[in-house]
Image (cartoon, rainbow, N blue to C red; front, top):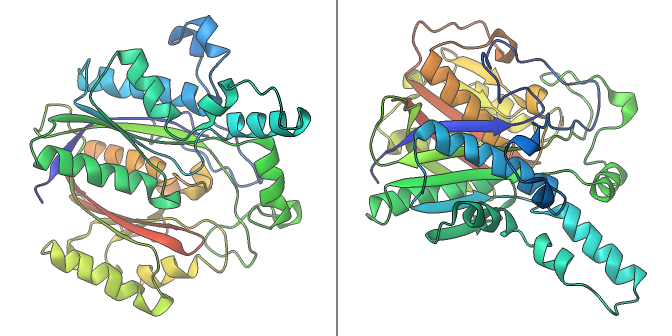
Length: 353
């Protein structure tokens, strides 16, 4: 499959990622177990009457996609593809509460219509009046990777030249309560978290939206070349090295060719062992981690892809992300390895454009 180019990247996250000097202004967020995204002033982008009816994930995605399209200089993409793990969970909760409160009678369809996972992609298309291919992937932590893979296929098959690809997830009060009850989220007593040496279970939960314009042709503003993606639902601990090495071999690379590897250390002692195994393969690469900056959530890899794009474009690695002391004069190849709780493993290979 031919490589494609990431020609723009925008992100709303728990960092101030919509502003300038992103790599210089990253700050760790490890002392609260639930961290919220820094939201822009939506009135600048969305009519006030519409804002009231939109859930947080739709609002974040509308603004992030707006930034991505503007940066790429594209008014109408040839396809819109969005990945999400939880979809519009705020409206899902409202709908279910309505069902219970009204004893399953006299329900208004609004919350149900707005609660479906494909609402985000649909609202972006409505805003743009775009009638092109519109698709949503719901594959927990590999939702963005499936979306990027689809975009690559669309471009390779000649179906599209510029594709808007995004990932988005929001927090909701009830879901966060349930995550605390089943120990998905760290206990207050386990804070602050030492991500690289954690001995406790659970994660710090974040949220955000990341959007990219993936194109057939390289432009002056291109961030990176999306070379390849590998996704596997299950990988045993003793298979991690083979999983990565086979992927590199498919792309005619060895571990020495990877200048930086970005690992999804989440602070969950058990599932982070996968990343510790992966580190052994890259002694001479810059080893980086990122979830102390973004929190863990279904599409946290959107944040890492966004940061990787900036590292490749600006040719600098933020100190705050470094695990080892390996410094690279120039960064050509970046490998991103991510999973959620030990399931849905993904590898994304990016090359300097």
